[in-house]
Length: 214
Image (cartoon, rainbow, N blue to C red; front, top):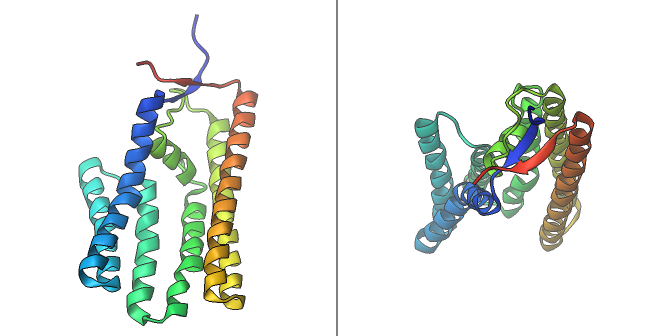
């Protein structure tokens, strides 16, 4: 008797380790380099150090594994835009433009991969939480990941528009506060919508989720 196809997640402790490492290499390393660089040489040195750490991580990953993780790619885009604007202008308002511009760039990145065989949402699910799909390719599951990639392109587009409007109409402090609130709220809504959508797709395809064997 053959078992029904299912999605597979690492066991809880392994899942925590995998997710933690993904966040450390994509966010932890550049933030640590930025803090050390800023402490030693000021803001611009910190930004360059953070950007350098991200590009080095991407380069090492490319050489060792042949590919660059999606979160590292995202951080490369964000920090490159931020550093170019901050150092190139030195103007606070121009510097703040990196918030909406980075979100527009992420929107384009997600949209560009939405029709690919492995859309960015699927790639991130495999890298960040080590989600493993059934050995037999499931077209319905691929369509979900393509749709989820469009969903996240829309989330970042909406964030970019919101931040652009706030930047043009609100004082800096208000802009920063509402940007943080809007980012947190839309990301939480995007994650919730993705999870509910995935559960609906799994139910329709009669797929289950299980933890990997110890």
